[in-house]
Structure formats: structure tokens, C-alpha cells
Amino acid sequence: MADNEEAFWALVESFIEQANQAADSVSPTQVGGALLCAASRFNAYALAASSLDRASFKEDSEQSLHDYTAQFKQLLAEDLADYGEHYKVLIGNTDPADDA
Image 1 (tube, one colour):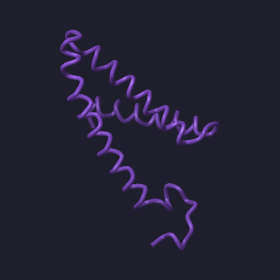
Image 2: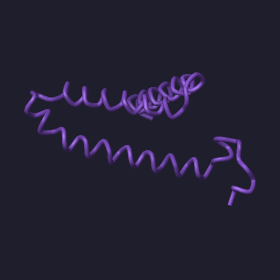
Image 3: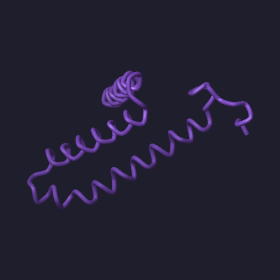
Image 4: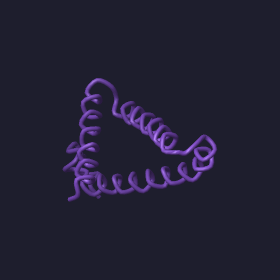
């Protein structure tokens, strides 16, 4: 695994760990909402900071919005499928009648 990829997954795991800790004191849906808000704000900053100027930022914003939402939709679909497939292992509290 490349160093960049290792660093990426280490960051992902650290964010998930922090989210799991936060979910001990507030609801997981509130934590998820906060993560979405933080990701949105940071990605807007990242695009602005990497743009040559305000005009290029505005020009790139619509395509970036499309790209980010498409990527999120794909990642969420994959994670929902994973939890659907491995629900018992990942969550544990399942009603045997619901295992169909």
C-alpha cells in the first residue's frame, strides 16, 4: 500500500474512532450530521484554497458539487450494502425473525 493510501485510511479510521466516541454522549444521527457538515465545510475550503482565484473557484463549484455528491452516494450505497450483508456481525442486536 502506498504511503498516501495508508495515510488516507489512517485518517478515515481516526475520524470514525472520534465519531464513535462522540456517539457515547450524543445520538449517532447527530454525530453523522456533524460529520456531514464538517466534510462539506472542509471540502468547500479545500476547493477554494486550491483555486487560482475567485472566478475559477466559482467556475469549478458546480462540477465539484456534482462530483462530491456522486462520490458520497456511491460510498454510502456500498456501506449500506455492507451493513445489510453483515448486520449481525457489525451490529449484533438482531431479531432472528428479521434475518430473512
